[in-house]
Length: 158
Length: 158
Image 1 (tube, rainbow over the protein chains, first blue to last red):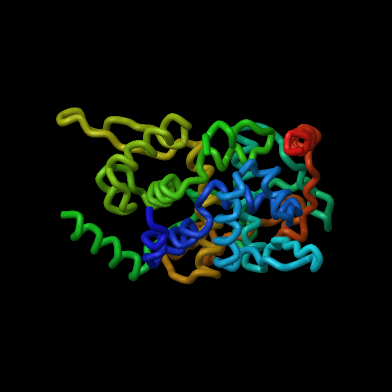
Image 2 (tube, each protein chain N blue to C red; image 1 turned 30 degrees about the vertical axis):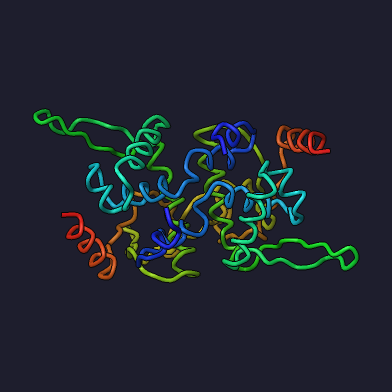
């Protein structure tokens, strides 16, 4: 699939998938949140080949998710750090963690809220009333733009 | 990458990525949460080829994320519905929605909490104190199993 196909839509879910809906990108993000910054460390902890890792890091820098910067001048060495845009992907890794732990088992990290000391299990809640939410609690109305796009697909499909 | 490589770890994030860290799987999930159930509708709304769609639906049924069932006997017709395991992937689509909307733009759906009427923007909060959380608010300690695994990778890498 061409990346552009997924981005050519008014749907922000699809646009986000175009950027981060890839197993290597997601594993690199996990590592970045664990504090990994150097190419060799990413390679070791992800198991990616140098070629694949290099392509993905370049893509993630181009997308503004990671920033590459020299941390040593002689010899010249680079590290990759999460930008603000990248840091805001933390909930994505957290929900994968929560779902994986519940349905597939395993324990990679133990999460604690620094401020109150509570064990942290990722959950979505309503910003209005604070209630924890599931799919059944939220009404999703398709926007006019997205509706037009879907009707166009239906016509093209005939 | 072989799927088994990603699953062969104590890390639930990696295990989850092995199941759902794929652009087609994620787009199929988005559609399923929008109410799509039939093969033709998935095909039209995702733009996947029949071959790719068929493979992914089969995989997702095998993984227990979707369930295939006949909704018509004559002619025999099937539909694909989210299981409980699949329904609990809703936060994954929500965080992609939130991040995509903020950083990439577009509006696919408008989300409302049915109970209180608040506009819903996905956010993670602490189950203990209710505070909204970002990556900086949570301490992640690597579990003993995962630490052993990482040290083994380091040895193998030398």
